[in-house]
View 1 (cartoon, rainbow, N blue to C red):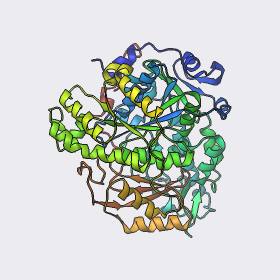
View 2 (tube, rainbow, N blue to C red):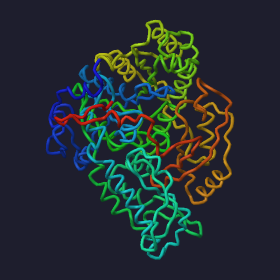
View 3 (tube, one colour):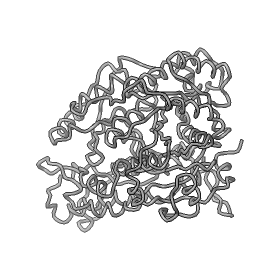
View 4 (tube, helix red, strand yellow):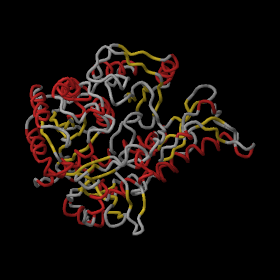
Length: 559
């Protein structure tokens, strides 16, 4: 089979104006084109659609993944193509890829095989410049903080308390901890600082939760950048930064329209980290999609304990959106992995390990249906090494849970390989839901109680413990009036626990909180459990070493 980039490079794309008009009814005058095959949709036009009824929302999530991932994006695209091929007005809403993973370990994030969004190279690289705009706005705030201190520090900022970091959209471990303002008095006051990757910035989370320029400016103003010597919060608004930062993001806020290999429309917009933030594409794109299409297929990062939880408890809570059905992606290899099979041996048939690993998928299904109150179907994303016996056993085990499972081969066969899955989703959408949509916790609980609710209800933890410094930070956040915010737990995606080696469905384990961060502009409190990197490093053999530019201008080596 051809590689992802070979398939993408050989694809014949339709002009984006035709895709917009024929699939979504968007006139060319409402597009801001970025070349022939990608465009932003004018925000003023989207605002004019406010009276349109919303379509149906399908959330793609997954069981706890193996390190290579189980194909949520590929499944999102394949399902969208299948629905499109069946004659439905369907579109996908995806996150924009970060160039950190593109040049690092994971590669691109535009789907795979015959289920991709295109132009794949553009999407995985600079695209429409959204991430550059976010980086510029983020770093403007950093510059204004240091400039304010240099020119007399009227706000009496304690430079030791500054939490706002600079960002860059590549993996660079040397920038994690730095010292700025060296070289004498003219360069400011030296202090410790650091860089995050763009997708880990609070500004990225704000960008993906806002729905208007006015709301964007308000949220930016609410960012807490540090504290005074008297321990009162200092915000971006105190520095007069919100207007200029919002101006840098004016054009970026409009959703990016592209297409799948089979000509279905897709919004690819925003890309917050799925650990330190909520891991979903923008609310702006999702709501616009629901007004333009009958069915929108979107995804949330990592497994249903992380991505789907944050989709529900943060994105849905703040936007009022509600998924009509969840597609939980499962693979034979992930089930065997949770059943105790080492990564190197996952290609060997082992029905017993599939049965043992079902404990992980079973808990995810219970959380989706019983905690979030969303009907579920299972997509069995089939790999060439999967045997018929293994796949059939997965379908049987899922049926025992009262859920329908549909083997899918969209990676190799495009939308046609996800046709059964699409029909299963349509059947679920046609049925009245036996569940009532709900959040994992109520708004009026304390921050501590919210963390405990997630830990016990979703993760199966027995108790929550706190570093003393994390506890003090939490208490300060509550004293400053932020206790009503939802929490965003950052932990490993490979386990329900904080230990990536504790597979399956552990119970009674300890969730230990080592750090607490306030994202006041985004409107949540980050609770860090375990080691979470906000500036990844490159592996020994980075993907960048395989990426090249041919003499005819063709980009090679992306995956």
